[in-house]
Length: 141
Image (tube, rainbow, N blue to C red; front, side, top):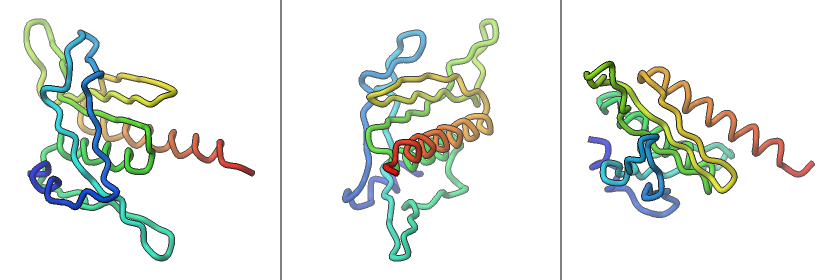
């Protein structure tokens, strides 16, 4: 399981956040159900980097999405991304396999009911691209 494996990593350069102030649209706190994964960004001598632990295909979809969110956080200090089970209902029936994404920084806060795993993965990559573009546009020239 991802969370058990991640807690075994060294804490140097690790990012871990809290969600005590993040709420779902209905005002439900995510703090009771969310344990952020710990990832570590390793910088290589040639100027590149990678995330440890690497993504494992045997992890659940929720664990994979949380890993991606943590890897994005590791590149963007001050940004908190939380992925939770979607709280989607059809009539009186709960719809399983959907995901919500919460993003927070000192400049913005956003919540998206992402829907499916594929759509949530796509949205997280869009968040990553937007943060990269923001850093590039704020870089000294």
